[in-house]
Length: 245
Image (cartoon, rainbow, N blue to C red; front, side, top):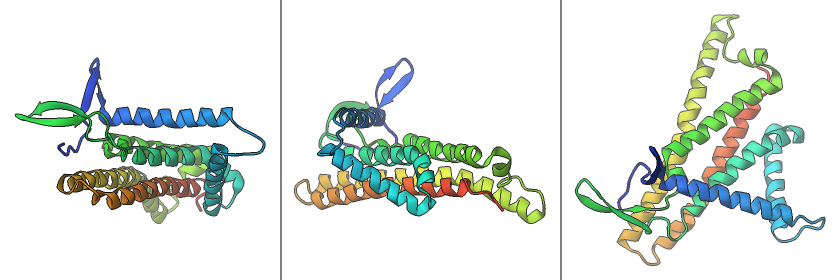
């Protein structure tokens, strides 16, 4: 298996390429939807099994969010977005560590060499995916800011011409919004792609036993990256919904 920076297309729908990372993202979404439907079907007044796990996760996320927002009401408004980002990123990261992600694929000829193109690849090792998640995070921040404090008050964060200092700060705020897109997307992509490369290299050098500690490390890193992405989004939401003074 070769290490490719970009996602590899498996087939095409017309001119639209269906890549291995896109297939994995569909599987990730399917897993989350099926888990939600199963949980909904088996909801009980006295929780047990999967419902206990789900309630613990929801309660833990809300309590963590309360520490940032300072308000349970505000946490509940942000919860759908924050929980979705966290669960999608964490599930996608862990899914990419399962057996079959990497070794199973088809052989194709690239630049005169026959290489293995895997059917499945970690979703967040594709910069297109992480950039899309970053765009969702940043755009949602603007929407919440406008919805909760009003368009006029929110715009003063970027366009305030009372004095040169406020004007300069507004310009910095505009640049910071663009910087969020870059930092969000490249941080997640870089860590997941680096982990993918590490596992391929270690498995290629010493395929037995030695890679196991690195798999556990990647499980932890996958969780941390999902947590960091979600908590930073929450912090930016909190800042955006506070009136600028």
